[in-house]
Length: 388
Image (cartoon, rainbow, N blue to C red; front, side, top):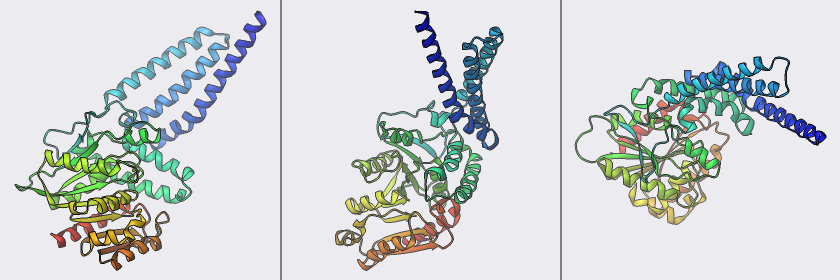
């Protein structure tokens, strides 16, 4: 019997050692990295919680092995645990409510009965930190994204978030990235969420709208903030639905976008004759599907670094969009969507009579919506003005 107890004890010690090793490998590098690179006080607080977790696990591991001074190790565990709980409480208290200040032009909306998940990890951990961490890890997971490119994109993206941080309307808004992670984990993600931006001091009557479909990185809050720079001078509404990882090929994806558009039309006045459909990267698939299946609902199409389907080569698509406006913006150095491939699609549309305008940024890559946001929005604005 004593021998069995001894074996069980050794097995438990081995299991604890394995757990601690896993924690060390997972939490250690990320926590240390965040200590030096976190963009916010909350980010540094999360880093501290990670290090405290490692400390607690180490104390418990040593204490279980019956050290010479068990009270010392037990007391250390209690102190670290109390510090962890106190820091966690502070971080949770700082989680954005999802409610922008009264009179704010931007807000969360749902076409379902869902509500904003204030205490979801994607809101407790600021979106800027998620982007920062994601771009640090991405070159390891994505063979197309090099480490040098990742650092460059990170600098540009963090610059956008720094500007957005100064905007009180967006500061308390929180993130929609929880539904991206739900999609990755195979959990329900289509809750009918969308960002709605309605500029202040709009003229009376219906106004134009931009329905924006995000890419595979999810519906970053920064996208709506960037579109707001175009919406203000044009007096147009921005509707940005969230659809997980941006799998716009999937059944129900385009329905989710149309539901957001229809719901927004009940919240604010929208001119149904002046709805522009825009898509970034994988959002281009959704744009092309909606343009094929619901062509008459849209005044024009905007495709930014887009993934495009073969359907744009079809006569049926050309018949629907012959003489109608399509704007394509792309980077000449885009390795994910090579310019040669994109131009085959635009050439097919032009040959079918579609009024395609193509703007290429020779030195830019797939992330030009961040790196050249001012130029991109300026060109879209000029194109819209010509049409109006």
